[in-house]
Length: 60
Image (cartoon, rainbow, N blue to C red; front, side, top):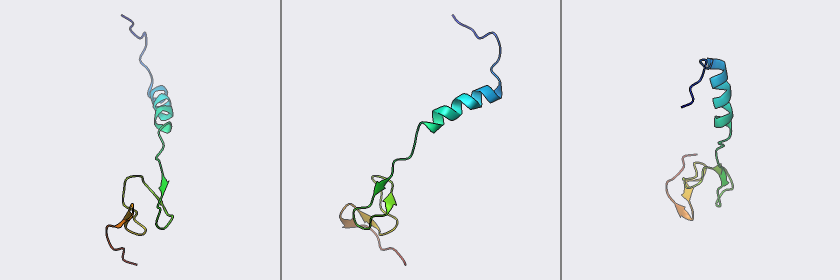
């Protein structure tokens, strides 16, 4: 079984993990009602619509 000869330093570990976390980006879609950017499968916080339905009233 392979065993590392020396301990990996913190900077090497963080440097490697930073590249892994960078690969995942947050998907953004456009609200069909108002055109504002929103997260997919969630209510638009700008207008309160989810799909074609008004889910809640937005205080302006």
